[in-house]
Length: 135
Length: 151
Image 1 (cartoon, rainbow over the protein chains, first blue to last red):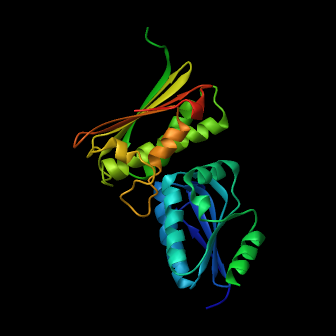
Image 2 (cartoon, each protein chain N blue to C red):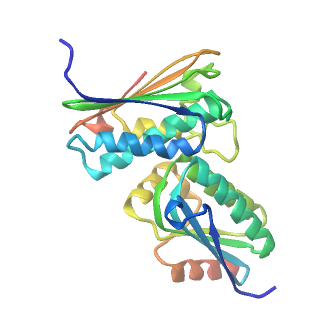
Image 3 (cartoon, chains in turn purple, brown):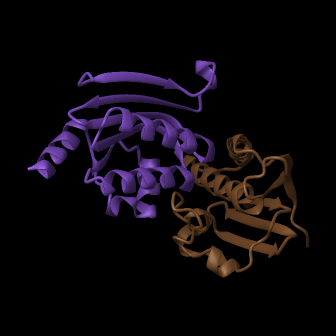
């Protein structure tokens, strides 16, 4: 399996109809998921299915979730992130969230998710954190 | 004296997940007719999303063929959003409103927490096997987080 692979997962037939797009990238056993759009009841299911499959196929241990282009999140969206956190943690890995806009940040703070999933300002910071954890 | 209704929408749709986005966008479009901040609109969207998701997931237990009704009413100083289902109802409303109460490990049980945090008032009426109605109120220029009533 190549060390670095990139996939585009389109969730609907037409680009303009997409509620959520995921771009997945894997490197050094870390899967990076860039989320664009809305994370709610419907797209949470799509997120779970796609990310779980990619974690398995890419034999990834860690997960970086880039939420810089998330325009909406509710408790269904947070639930699916929590579910991935539990899954990755149970296999000895780490989840890091990056790129929060103020609205999404507020919701994450209220939910308490940030007390167990670290949030970094940039992808470089996330990699530094993962490297530190690996030592 | 009855308050003057500035505008009202009545929206009824099948209990399909796709309609959660439809309902929150419609309610936000209605709310935007009031003098609200973008933050307020985001909060209304999240609260509506939670109430409609609850109706679909819990009220109708994910049966997509039932109907959810949303009534949005604008007053001079308030928006009131009612989300009603004719589903299984809630046996213990107080327990259902507790943070982290969820029957599903992939869900955080934060639906009511977000509704309470983002709206000025959250009222839940429910009867077993008859259905549930959640009423969300947000006052314009209201005290927000400092002044909440939950019943």
